[in-house]
Length: 448
Ligand code: ADP
Image (cartoon, rainbow, N blue to C red; front, side):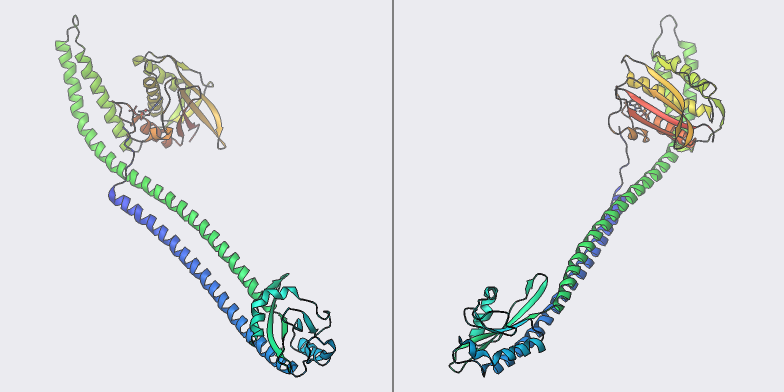
């Protein structure tokens, strides 16, 4: 029977509320960060759009004025290279004064007719203009149009296309290309925004993990607290019941002894008499364990010869059990400061458990002790090994009060042993041995 702690409904509801609170905090931080990132993104978008709009307007105005000016000087034959001698200086001035990267005229097939800086040969085609074919088509239909932003080797460019007509109504396109560096700042801002979003989400992830871990630790601690409170009240109740049982039990025992003396037939023994005694012993043990667990163990510590203590425990054990105990002698004169009766009780309990685990199996119980260094302290280590089936499941669970796998077990022996060892400032643990069987180890300080 494993009577591990089962939280009641109110406690479950409380834990549920705490979990909801943490989930709420995480969700709120998530929404806040998302809203902040979204807001920054929208702000970036608005700012970018606004700057681009006003740039478009400026470029269009400049292009309209320039096309109007150039229109007066456009040759009758647009492919007459000499006809552009008046236009080139105008383009150069626009280039310099308006801070454009390039200013030139093209025909409908993107061939350059004249260029501000004379870098391009007459009638060479500017292939990349095809990317802006829509804007150029619109310009050919008489509207001044700006292109999309072009990013070339980390530089951002924008072009404006404006129609220019000669006297015969033939159309050429004025192209003005601007390097819009300031938009790079916005691009940096955007990059910053992405990095910020990633970092904030990573931080949120870390904070969430931390919160979840902290909450589960908190809930575990709280559950333990609830458990110990419950055990404390159960212990109080058990102590009261145990006291009430103890007295009638004493009366039953003495009465049964009297009756046995009077009616026991030695010639024809009836084993029912033994049953009474065995059950009284069992009930007594149960009552004592209940009382031991419900009270803080009070220690009466004296300097004790550990070898002698172990020897005594083995002798007590042998009076009821005929299993072999291999007591490996501890280092001579190993004296510790402890409550000898209580440590005797622990060793005896571990020996009895080992014997019960082995039942009819062959093998032996080994009881060994030595001096070791643990966490920088010199301490005594006592090990009890058996050849039983070992512990199935989590070995730490067996120290829980009321944990038992035996039909007639109380599940209190190890819980009491643990509280005694811990009261001495020691530790106790159990584990399965690789070769089979169980090993219990407890450590005690040599001196308190
Ligand atoms: P009880 O003996 O009344 O069951 P204990 O607290 O002494 O109570 O033991 C709790 C449980 O631990 C046992 O029911 C058993 O399942 C397990 N146990 C204890 N000692 C051993 C052992 N030597 N080998 C295997 N299991 C053990």
